[in-house]
Image (cartoon, rainbow, N blue to C red; front, side):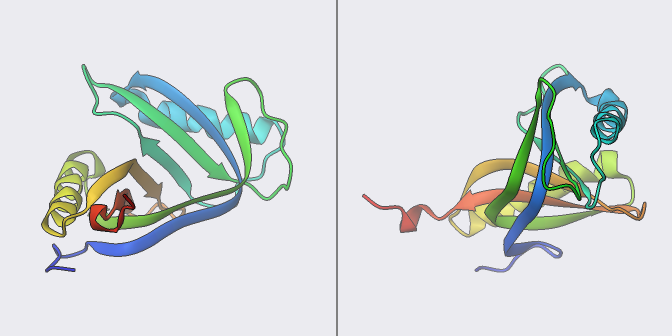
Length: 157
């Protein structure tokens, strides 16, 4: 790999067992409210969170509307999902490039997106998955941001 921006790493992965997910479209300012409602719904239906809060940003927000999928690892091996919610016994995505957002998440995230995209470009890699955000469980002022990639030189004919 060429020189990477400080804080960017390659060959990362996200992997969790027993994950509940829900995809939703809403104004970006409602993210905290939507995440809290999702977690509350999972707990109300008998799920016990055991991992970090994860979400993927599945679009370039137009008119500030986001398409997000929330993912929450739970302790239970089964889960009765309601409409719009899914249970996955295993979730894994790789390879990923990773960057860290520190401080003001809302304003620093775009900087990390740009660093990740520049690192992919400078190494001849192409994005092939949405940005995944992993929020700290302890309330720290940082978050990990991941993006999936592929090396087109390794693609079969």
